[in-house]
Image (cartoon, rainbow, N blue to C red; front, top):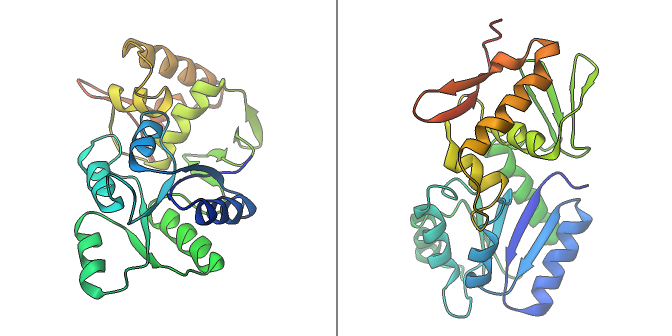
Length: 232
């Protein structure tokens, strides 16, 4: 299974298929959609790793979609690449002014696009190797497996996803609502106490390896994974 998921928002079917094929061949999971409205519905579920958005979309433009992504506390950190035929400096500055991270002009090189995506994922804290390591916890996002000192840690899918999200952003405090949105999706109603139950299960799975206290409770907020502390 590919390590990272890419949301592609492109209204031209031929280009959308080219993007899907190129990114799939580069070992990404690809979710191609034709307009901003469909993209916003996708973003109500588990977040992709990155979005490639065409500037000229029917209805809401790619720039307006990027602006809305940045205004939403759940999606505000999503890396965004704008794909467009516009090449003027003023257009690029407008895109960057709306929170776009990178800008690729059509016609584009598929190899360059893949290279730009990988570079942006690295800058965003998503290492290209597909491996994350915090406090001796090794998480392989390709194999969807977790190990500590060579010993496999058996996690249910929900606990795995919680751990992956926190390990991607070490020392960042996540609100329970943010964890709910990213693990279960905003279109599914789940009580915030459900997060506490699954964090408890995650800690239980890590306890035999003395890594359970890496998951910190932030009073009145939620949880974070501590990149340094290994208190017993």
